[in-house]
Amino acid sequence: MSRSKSKRPRSSSEPAASSQVSTEGAHAASAPSQPEAASPSSSPQPADAVQEGTSSPVPGPEAASSPAPVASPAPVASGSVPLSALRLWLSAYRVEVVLFLVAFVVLASFSSQRFLRQSAAPHFVYQAQAWMEGRLDVDPQVLPNMEDWACVRVVNGEKVRCSGRPLSTDRWFVSFPSFPAVAMLPFVALHGYQFNDTSFGVIVGALAVALFYSLLRFLAKEGETARNRNENVALALILAFGTLFFYCAIRGEVWFSAEVMGVALTCLYVRNAVRAQRPLLAGLFFSMATLTRTPLLFTGLFFVLEALCPGPEPRLAQLKALSQNWRPAARKLGLFTLGAAPLAALAAAYNVYRYGRLSEFGHAYLFNNRVNADIDRAGLFNWEYLPRNLEAAFFKLPSVSWSPFKLGYDPHGLTLLLTLPLLVFLLVPKVRPRLHWPVWLTVAVCALPGLFYQNTGYMQFGFRFSLDYTPYLLMLFALGGWSLRHRAVLAAVALGVLVNFWGAVAFRGYTELVRNW
Image (cartoon, rainbow, N blue to C red; front, side):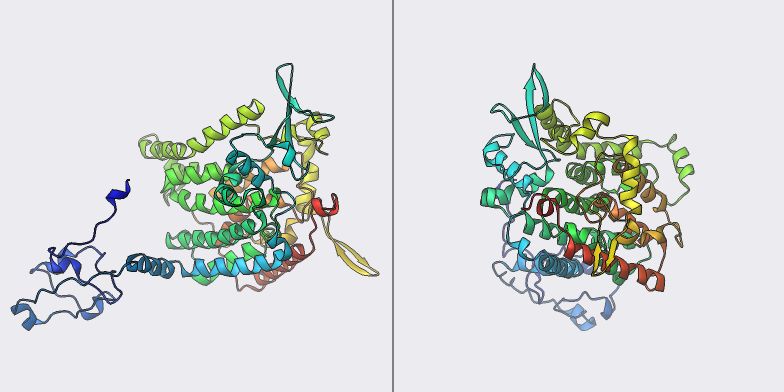
């Protein structure tokens, strides 16, 4: 819409009844008129039904017999409408705002000196700056390091991974899905290669905490959970400081910043996918999430299940009914696909340009990487990777030495029973409401590919790939009916916070321990 079609000021010739001004300024002037109140046949409203903020009482019989004086409309102060809208927004979302501020302060504090500088692995910043310079590859002359970049060399007309000494004809790319670089574009446009991805990650992390609370509040409002506001706030804080989200959100770096942004986008996706109420938006946020963390592609199952079986009736009955009335579900699935298609098409085209394949993001072209031998021998996914990934996710324990006392962790992983102890209560829920099985199935299809992946997530504190489905696991706890005041639940929460506090303080990443950066 062009600027010339912006809202015009109200003319003084318009009826005074439509321009009555409240004590808050322009709030009542911007509200629609109420035909029922103006109708002579309508019954009078009780005093407690008058909306808060109106400036006149309910008229009595004497007032009804005499004509009311026509008042000239009061002028609306410049900027009062945006201020009023801002007040209304802050009033409606004050809990989210407070959660954002609290999470931001705590995460920034734990980020410490890292918060003030760019991380040691700012891959998305370099990708965004390359786009700003009009190129799709990354300039190898300015790369900050040689860690986890994809290098493509054309040999006999075929694109292969670079080996040996880099050549001037080699093309370099970020070996991760590109949406985080898209999100950073406006800021990189201002700051260039110097943009601080660490502080950006902290802000995104704080936003994710607020979005998760908003999702839980929406589920409670829709009757999907029985949680009250305080419980939803507690669960949002558990996500922030009682899961692996804590240490991932304070580091920046390409590996962790993508995990954190994936959580934020998952909250937006699920919020719009519940009962398939907003399929177009659900598809859009789903594509953003998938182009941030590839395993989130499998969470599309959640929308499919919600589109096919949105009601409280037994799912088998709803599936049988589809044979008679399939059009609503087909329409929702079509709109979901339409919402996801634009970014998906761009990403596919970008992958073909870089690597010659639709689904290749770059890990098969990692330059001089320790995982290349496994990839060449068994591929990116293989059954032989399952034992070590299961060990990293469920069986790795801290190491303890007593003289002197020292507590250590394995950089390949740490059991989820310590980093997310609430997992135990998901296995024995008090109740199984409508969303119980759709969320469990979504967790399963999202988690399984990572268990067959060639990399455990090294170096890490805990099995960081579990962060892809951690929001769904906490949703399951919210659905499961366990009270947050139960002693066992409180003990599990305390243990999770303590362990993840340790991770936020003690973790030293690959760039610090191996590369000494």
